[in-house]
Length: 79
Image (cartoon, rainbow, N blue to C red; front, side):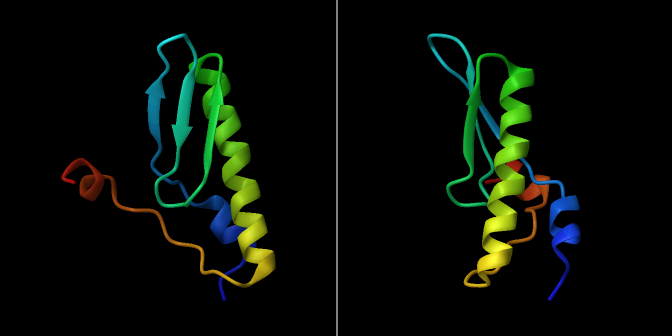
């Protein structure tokens, strides 16, 4: 099994959606349920990075699920 530090170092593509009433919702499609938001883009990205770390740590420590590797950006653009 690869180390926790390895998984935490991976860069995952994010989907960013502006909200009608302000703020942003951000998700990492490769990590099911890894979603966050923020009042501005900087806060939203900071929050999703924290959510990503918690998601990976939780899944890694549980050992019940494999942590997916990041999708290649080109495959996301083409889908």
